[in-house]
Image 1 (cartoon, rainbow, N blue to C red):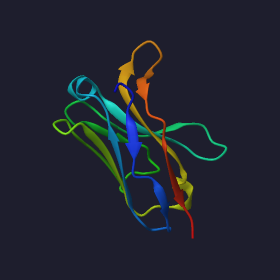
Image 2: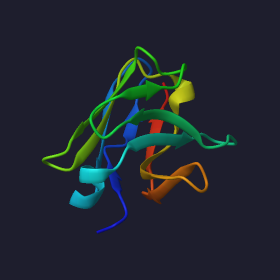
Image 3: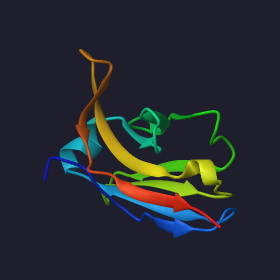
Image 4: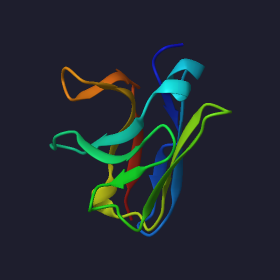
Length: 119
């Protein structure tokens, strides 16, 4: 398996929580930074959060204080804990891995998992 695989999406009420997971190869977890992106309806894909190989984290301003990214390199799982969810967090969430220096993006992308926040 080269491509990351996301799971954990679903429907939730505003103010609720979800935890997304992403599994990928041992090679990816041993060598690469990873990130979560999202694309909402009618919107461009945007970075939500990024975590370096040994833990440096970055967050989009819109999710700071509400979302937490983490990784378990032993179990090869990337997480995104999402709390205090808002309607505007509704999107398809993608796991990305391994910086692509040529494009400035990432080499590997998952298929995405839908997160819907609605009352």
